[in-house]
Each structure stands twice: as C-alpha cells, then as structure tokens.
Image (cartoon, rainbow, N blue to C red; front, side, top):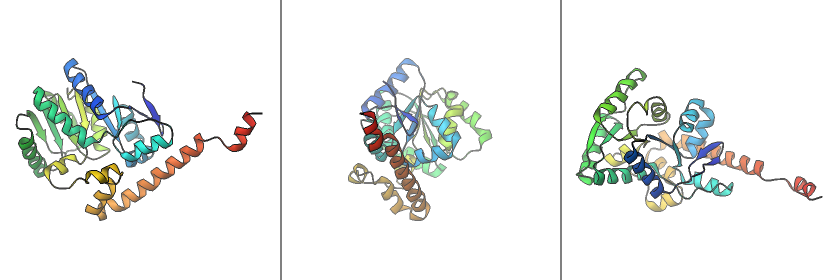
Length: 256
C-alpha cells in the first residue's frame, strides 16, 4: 500500500484490522516490523527534534495515533481511513497473541506499575505467554543488554511503555537486535492498564478530546504542554493549507 505524506511525514493509510493483520503476518513469516505512532504533539515535536523525526521515519509502519492527525489529513486532502490508537492496537495484539500462543515482552513504566499491569493483563488474558518484562528506568549504556535480554526471552511481540522520544530512540537503535517480529511503542498504556490513570470515555475519543481528558487528570504536568503543542499543530495545518491552496490571482492567470 502506498504511503501518504502529511507534514513531510510518510504515513501508512491502514485501518486497525489491517494493522493487526500486518503484524500477525510478520510473526508468521519471521519478518521484523517497527511501528511508529504519531499524534499532533509528536508531529510538532518531530519538527523540533531531528533525532525523533529520524527515528519515526525509519519505522516500517507509521500510523495516525491521534484523531487530530486524521482530521488534518482530511482538510489537506490526505486520506487516512481511521485513527489507529496505540493502546487499542496494544490490546488487539495481546488478544491475538493469547489465541496464537505468541510470546510477548513488556518493557516500560515504574516497577510497581509494571507489576500491576501484568497482574491486570493476567486476568484479562489468562493464557497469554509473557516471556519477560522490565521497568523502563534505564540508562543509555544499558540499552544493548536489555535488547539482548528481550532476544534471549524468545518474545515475538515487544511493547514499549515509555515516553517519547525514549521509545522511538530505543526502537531505532535496538529494535532489530531484540529479535522481536513486532516492536510497538505504547506510551502511557501501561499506566492505564495498571489503573493508575484513566482513559477518556469513547465519546471524548471520537471528538478528539482525549488530550483534554488527560489534562484534567494532570493539569500541572500536561496543561501547558498540550496547549502549546495543539496551538502549534493548528498553525502547522493552517500554513500547509495556505501553501497548498492556489491564490485567486494565480488561478486566474493559469486560465488565460
């Protein structure tokens, strides 16, 4: 499938079902897929952080994790069929892994949160094979050893519950070394599954207000960040729209 370019970033126009199938096909064939997820905030940060932009661009699949990205695509004539939320893809892949007996590795969050999440996952997916796990607090010098530990575990799906750009940098540098057939950065999903934070109700998600719901939970930490990045994303969209729309004068000249 041909990639579509939005804000200079190549995106894969896949549905959730197509993405899950692509991941399962990779496991079956023994291929390796690194997944990059982008929302409004990350697209803004990619313009400010070349290392983050390079890491995302190097992923085998780059998906629209934010509803705002899908909407911006529609405004700018770039068709993305639907939002593929990172946490929803995470849950779909866990369910598929349980059925197909695919071993998984869980890397990220604080140790206590990680243990709480694994307990919750055990209740929801009792037959799921967790090949290994580790908290997400480690230095750069430890990354190689962690990648080797994932490889030694035999895990075929690796989920990274870490913030950006740490998970993208780890994926770019060591994703292949882990031996996992699918590497998926799921951000704060570990905290949600552990019950530490709550996910926005479905109606808020459909309205593209999941960021606002998160801000209400952590206003001091997230308020300024989301307001700043959302304003920057809106400005990016407007600038792109102006750039793509020919002026009346140039349109008239073209028809003379």
